Each structure stands twice: as C-alpha cells, then as structure tokens.
Image 1 (cartoon, rainbow, N blue to C red):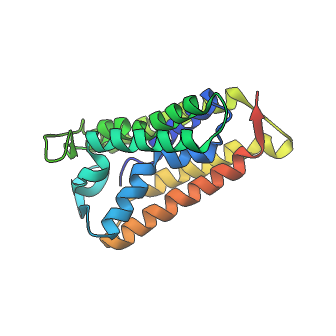
Image 2 (cartoon, rainbow, N blue to C red):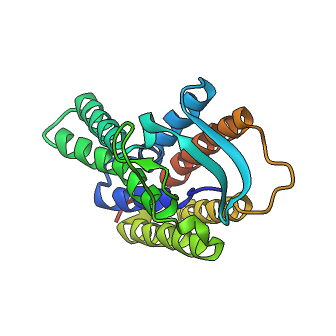
Length: 222
C-alpha cells in the first residue's frame, strides 16, 4: 500500500558504515517522519484518504502532509534528529554519529520521492513532486526488495555472528520483512479506516525496530 521496506535498506547500509550505532536506532531514524506522520494523522493535523485503486501499488491519497513529507520538513527533521543524537552522545565521534543519523532520517524523503505520486511538497504550500513508482506494482516490489537486499548484503558483509544464533538471525529478520512487504501489497476488500491505518503503521514500525534490536544483538563488527 505504500513504500515500506525500501526505507530499511538505508538502515542496514548505515549500520555497515557506522557499526557503533545499533541497527534498531537506524530503523527508527529511516522511519522517523512516518512515525511523526502517523501521530499527526491521529491528531487530525495531516490528512490522507484511503482510495482503493488510487495507484497500482498504493491505496493512499496522501494529499496533506506538509509537516512531515515536504522537502523543507524533511531537512528540518533530519537536522533536528542529527543534532539531538549528537548531543546525546559523548566522545569525538558524536558529531559524525549525528550526521549519519540525520542522513538516515533524510533518506526517507529520497526513497519516497521515487515511490510517491506528486504529493511531496518542496516547501509548505509549494509545488508537489513524486516520480510515481507506485504506478507499477511489479516495479515497486522490484525496487523495494532490491533496496532491502542491497542494504542487507552490506550489513552481512560488515558484521559477523557472535554465536550460532547470529548466523541465522539476520536472515530471519530479512525474511520477516519480505513477508510483511508481500502482505502489505495484497489486495484488500475492506481497507482499514484512517485512524486504524495510522495505528497499524505505528505498531508495524515499532515492531520492526524491536525485531531489528533482537537480531542485531547477535552480531558484531566484522
């Protein structure tokens, strides 16, 4: 129904670049604006409609989300997240860690730009852009799964198992995510109402972060 696991390819890749930052924190970072989006939807501030058939790979008409998904908002979220993360850490590499977290947050807008129709404002009230990958379910699956597998491969190449569980944990995580991706794009006869959809999104993002935490605990830098 929307760009989903493609965002997490950046999380896996970032973990390979900066092994000192746990994978679950990157999982939160790459979906931070969607956490905020779901919360603002529940608050009635940002709005969307559930419209079956709206695009081949999405039933969401995301017509008002300037505070989370405009380019200006994405930059603000990224800078704020990176600055807060750097301030929360100690040592000479705190700024570097903050920059990487900020880039992970901003990666969300880049991947959404590929997937969305023209619903991403450049600034508040400005023109909207989107390359429209969702117009093709096949290519949506190819690109999203491809991004996840590339990121997963980088993660596997830059980490090693701490023990027997660590040999299978990342594959279980990736398999779980692929299953969610397939389920996410199954046809639905009765789509959830808007509040339920936002709650489901928050639960899904949170669950994946917890599962990533559990899997990443079984690995260490290679």
